[in-house]
Image (tube, rainbow, N blue to C red; front, side, top):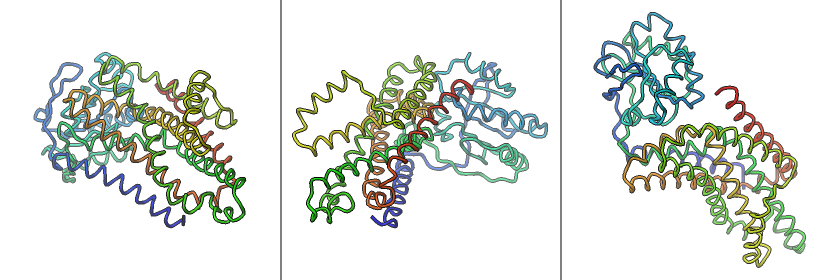
Length: 438
């Protein structure tokens, strides 16, 4: 496959993913609005705050969660801004916990730990919808006329926040449009799926998936070369014949879909627990981080040293089933690839949860209170997004393998070792985040 074709496929992959999310988001969403939605919250001190009661000041809404690392990193920034008297006199800051299962005591401890002297309250479900909170933290600035002048997510530097606040105070900014969501949106599920697939904790693992696919093709090529004639060798310089290459796309779509199902196993189990028992498990979720980190380190070491972990009883059961099914060599290789891709998907999902658990919690908890039909459609939309992205990524890798094999057919081991180092570093990061930053 030509490099240009690979680039086109990659661009198509990104564009289709984006358009799919935008389509569902706008198709099942309310209309865009520059006007801030009315709200009413009760602070930890029992004071009732509403949009009307604060209409004489500029509002800065800080949507967060006590388990969100970036939210914690933003507190010193907000403290510095709050220390500016010219801003403090004209601005009301409200920090809003979006997780209704966080206890009041936990939120009070959070406020005390980070020396928060402005208002802290729990956000209502309608606020999460009205202000389009799909990532944490989310910052919304509202002027005295009730127009939204700023809406951004993630870490926002102090200069940016300070400048926008001052411009809003001075009346220099007009309204900025955000898309408000209805009670239930398939768009939220699609965007949650996209965020889960491209999670910064898991996305670095894709090189190992590349090494897995390329490695399997190289192994298959070697076996074919040993068994084929010289005439066949001349036709299979890229590793497979044209006929095999032409018919391989459905197979790789299937393999990618299996990997997507593996990712869903990780999210699905957590989703079921959230739906069934809700907040009673929420306080234990942070403790999954060091477990996942440790498993990633072990997996990375195993991958680096080419040591194969054996789970005797499980492996024997799988082998027994496979012996009945594997009547020929190709079927054995295919089933082996399916098994490995499925296990990879589970690992990818676990790693993704290391960064995306709060957002998935928000999604799962939001739809858990809806009707059964809406819950089903929400999880179907989330699941199809994951499967589509994984299947398309696998197909892209498989279609590009001719060019990739020419450039890196002798570098598979290096790629595998680099990927294993990345996996180990991700595991170390998760451990450091839990023990040093928590």
